[in-house]
Image (cartoon, rainbow, N blue to C red; front, side, top):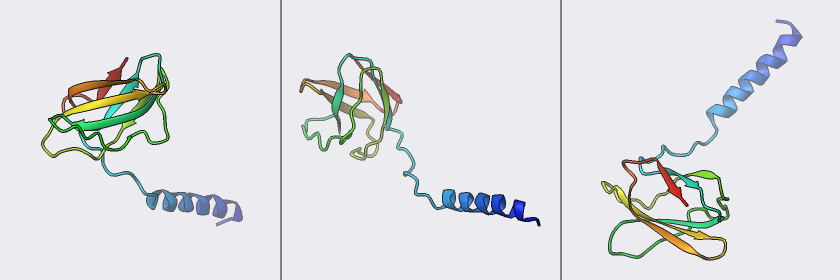
Length: 115
């Protein structure tokens, strides 16, 4: 094997090894969804809770991120109840205004639109 072929071959093997050992997120839950912000406000906070009498929104799913007008984002959350499809979604905009989408069937939809 000539020297010219050794380096590309080594680089290809190194790349394959890096990809094989790169941590990957867990498989998406069927209740995860894409949120489309078609409003004219920036979504600063996002909360998802199972529909029901409790009013415990938990942690902000967006964390430090925001969703600008016209943007979409895949929403992965872990506060789901097994065998439950209906969830309430609360968005809080950058000015502090909020809105709730109640009883969203996240087993039957993969896209939620705000706006």
